[in-house]
Image (cartoon, rainbow, N blue to C red; front, side):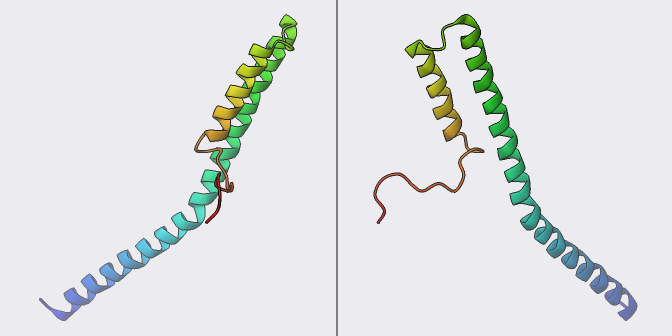
Length: 96
């Protein structure tokens, strides 16, 4: 192989390497922001669902019934355990 060809291959390889490093850095910076945005969207959707449930029960005049309140609490508990909605919460139980 000639030196100009080797030089071209080296420049191409270096460019690909630098592009890979830049891409990894961008992904490292952008991924948490995208995850936070998805969490906010999922939380807003769950709030809308809970609000609709409460509005529907209020229209029916059954908001005070314990089983429906229990349903709402179950939905809220499910929402709190959703992977996108679990934030930096302290672990349950004793700390070691």
